[in-house]
Amino acid sequence: MLEKRIRDLLVDARANARKQGLEAEFNFHRERSSLIRLGNSSVALSTSEELSRLDVVVQQGRRSGSYSLTSDITSPDQLAETLRIAAVNCHAALEKDYDPIFGVVEESVDDSTGFDPALESLSPVTKTELCKKVVDAVKPMGKYDFSGSWSSGSTEMYFISTANDNEAYRRLTDGALSMVLKEQEKKWELEVGRTQKKAGEFSADDFIAEFKDMLPVYEKNPGYKTHIDRQRVMFGPDAISSLLGLTIWGAFIGRMWEEKRAFSSNLKPGDRLFPESITITDDPTNPNVFGMPFDLKGHRRLPRVMCDKGILKAILYDSATAAKYKRQPTGSDLGNDDFCLSGGTAPAGVEAGRKLAGNALYIPQLHYTHMPDPTKGMFTGSSRFNARLIKDGEFAAPLLSSRVTDTIPSVFGGITAISSRTIPWNVSSTYDRRQPAALSIPEYIICNNVRISDVADSF
Image 1: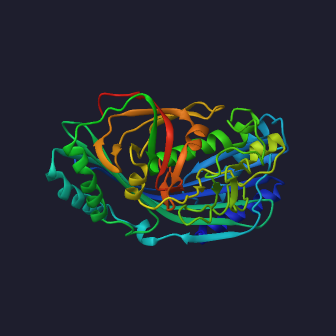
Image 2 (image 1 turned 90 degrees about the vertical axis):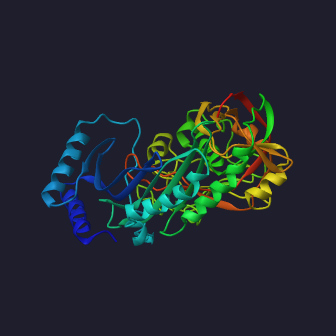
Image 3 (image 1 turned 60 degrees about the vertical axis):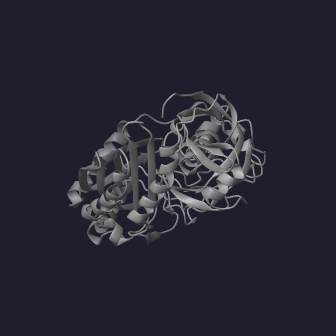
């Protein structure tokens, strides 16, 4: 549970709000974050911070007002002033054209299962030593330079409201290391990344082995310029995570669906959206994700099937959208994701995947993704790190920059194989407040007739 000093102050603030006849929500967020950034094959930045934030929302009828405090919580007077400002903002607010849903903690939650003290306190020295070992082992092999970053830390979230005495608390740790190797003359780049929930989940040897595995294809072969056409593509994990994110936004978000901007807006639950190979869930119990047990309106989060073997099952509604369109909220007042794309029946491992693909483009990452026409599910994105040509089941050459412009329904409709093994993929946000998030995705998918819309003469 939350530190007793802060918890007692927040519970007393809730009691104070009740005495004043205020409907108030208290959302506390505390993070301990550590970051090193690599540049020119050495540590260019090492920083850490501990930040506490409290968001207070006061609601009265169709009015609501909020105030955020970015500070350690130290006294009842400090909280009383925060509550007062939120109440003033509520009084001055315009009425909404719907009845907003007030936050209610449906059941008490005290979840620290995802917390690892060793990861929370992982030192910059330990991080630097691991990265140095990778650089020392790989850099002498060619004209290479390294960049990247390693963020790790802990996050605490605590939510209460005047609706009842229940409390929702969660504490967890997460980390992600990305190292990028750049060839200084030919300008191609390779990236190796890892997600962690606990300290010690990967080693320098893991990174060294993966770089060494990719380097011969890049060093011994000229870049391959493909052609503009529909082609067979084997997508890797980062590209799949991008496709899944675009799919969630373009097909399952309540506001998009209600405003007829989603490519699923012409469908209703029970209609077919995708082929039978596609099952998508919002599942906080999946071991690959970070697993948010409650949302920031107090709803208990349980597994929810959104697409079952291609059949549309559910649309996701945050509280504001649910109130506006008179729907039931789905525990979606979140800044993080627990989305899962189920695995298939194809053999596990990228090596098995490329042999199954035969002749194809391997695009493990999509960069600069955008959805120019969500009503059709149209997206665009460019290959970058680690992209290669597959010829006769083997990696044959590095792939020059190639742009995919297609629709989600078309890409998913062309799937011929999905890896049977799913893996975690970190999509955490650390630029604002720390929001640990991971998707569960297959290692690869193989698709026919993917539209390559543009190709470049360089990487």
